[in-house]
Image (cartoon, rainbow, N blue to C red; front, side, top):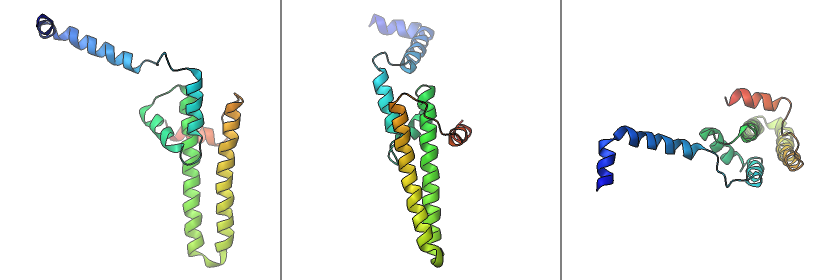
Length: 144
């Protein structure tokens, strides 16, 4: 009972402890190592599926600078692919004489998206930079 009275007698101190514990919760986890961070980066670069954890990382503004950059790039790649996929699909349905050509371009774009994602994973595995010349700058401007 005396400890409860101490909290009620000094609410400013309790608030200070609460703020201090919130700062501790936002601190980096000392048990998290380099391998789990790299595994998370690989997860972000998985085509289509990796966009969800990358969006979550961007939404929470979590992770270090490299995680933020890879998340932005993964989401930008996924959105560009999705936009192209839908637009080419709609074009193939509406324009009958270009249907085959648009479907071929659609399949090439999808294959390119998967190959670029695998290439970025390979570069990450080799400890190289995971940047694409025009897309990295675009993703940085899109997700500030």
